[in-house]
Length: 140
Image (cartoon, rainbow, N blue to C red):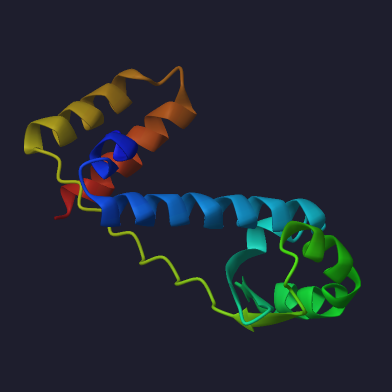
């Protein structure tokens, strides 16, 4: 989907696309200044009234960013001249929902696994794996 092409038809959408590109650029520039091990653990939220807001996803990143950000202020001001201070807030990542295995095998497939396991006496580990698979899904 070409958002710029769609944005030409709607000025409000074009403005949002442009703003999004600016924020992504700012985020990339800020991350280039920060230590590499911190980059995946925060994002740039905004610059509001001269305050650069960074969102950390864990306490370690929060503490480290709060510690090093004041020293990086001159470099950050090269990116956005009106930054006077940096605030770091924590916004923990949402835990991924536990994955649920919904696999359902037919009786024929389960019997096929059992049959193949019996024929694989010369590969005992593979035979055992097939038996376990048949047992796991044959009990449903």
